Image (cartoon, rainbow, N blue to C red; front, side):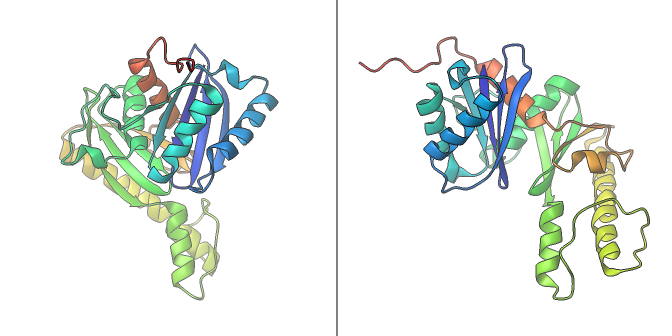
Length: 266
């Protein structure tokens, strides 16, 4: 089985795929660069046992991280607790199966590359992936599956927190879909501005991307708030919360080495 690790700015997602590509288990931790490999190992192996399987069933691993400070401990986790050397998305030896057609390919986040690989394998192209994470990103994948470019905007929750922190009289509010655009109180006005404002941004950017690219494009949403926003606009075709993980599986299969367990110590 494959252990796939998607390490973002806010959360780290660990998922185990069986040999048929199905997700057997999935666990989410808050991202903390101070957390050691042993802390990860103890928590993860215990959670795996609660779901009915042992760490010894893991035969391979792959990591995508946008937080360089956690990479060493995640690599150590794979080697110490699961006896396998992980593939790391973005390292030169890892074949993504796509070209990165931007000025500085090394600057594109590993999660965005995984999204591109997963989106093209499952949905073809050309397409746009909208990822609702710490940042809201729009990534364009051409008909051949290549990463064409993208847009980075502040994430929904980040924007709400910034609004609360910068304006003394504005409370901290949760994101949700207001029934009316015009708010009759402060909280309703903030929720409307954030939700319907993001809908306007999404629809406007999708239209501009398609016009500039010169073709209509399928739009796939992923990330924690994908379903909420996808249900509220015709601009998004569907939501796939596991898209990044599916991309990691696709990249692993492309790079799979039959004997990727570490050799026994002499």
